[in-house]
Image 1 (cartoon, rainbow, N blue to C red):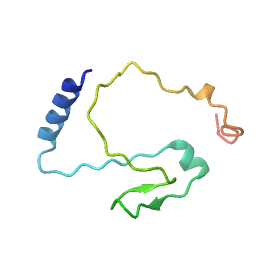
Image 2 (cartoon, one colour; image 1 turned 135 degrees about the vertical axis):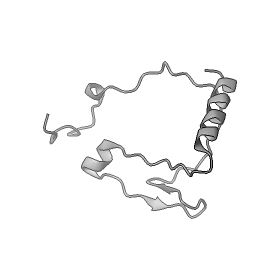
Image 3 (tube, rainbow, N blue to C red; image 1 turned 90 degrees about the vertical axis):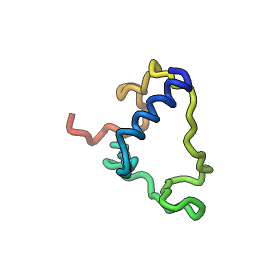
Image 4 (spheres, rainbow, N blue to C red; image 1 turned 135 degrees about the horizontal axis):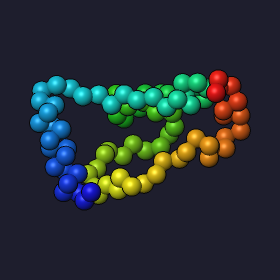
Length: 87
């Protein structure tokens, strides 16, 4: 999708949203199961928590390639990562 199509979808979502507040809350299963990271509040950006010291970059509207593939679980090689799972 080009940048214009992305903007159109965002505009439609804003219309659906109306006056309601949307929150981006998500969880990474690895972190839930193994708790390797500790999150800290950002002193510069209210409401932002992170595990590292990377600079926060605001989201931008750009072209979007939905054909990109995600990493498959069997290709993760973190030592011991899957050791205690029940499957």
